[in-house]
Image (cartoon, rainbow, N blue to C red; front, side, top):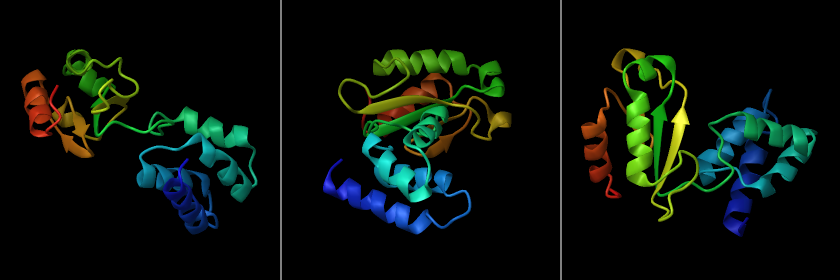
Length: 156
């Protein structure tokens, strides 16, 4: 973890450690600041909250939302929950992974994209849904996906 990241982790810990149930706000704050939760952040978090490293690591790895590695320059999240699956998100997921050369986890070889599953974006009535760089898009078919990708400037 570089000095900038280390300082960001320290700031988040200092600003959240007194909150009730501080672990989740702390993890969200670190991911918001860095895009992921570096493994080197686990010991100071554990110490600040009087938890074991295993407890902190367990929470980081339990929730799909938290990343342990830096994301690509663009993050694509495709809803994999029931409503979106019923409306075609399986085909959208397969297309996205194929088009971007991703297995659905981690960063593409060129570092341009991270493709991740999410489990409900709250747009069940407008399925399938996805996000691209934190912007939510509804009723996304393959053509719309390709158009959004091209507009992102990182089209494969």
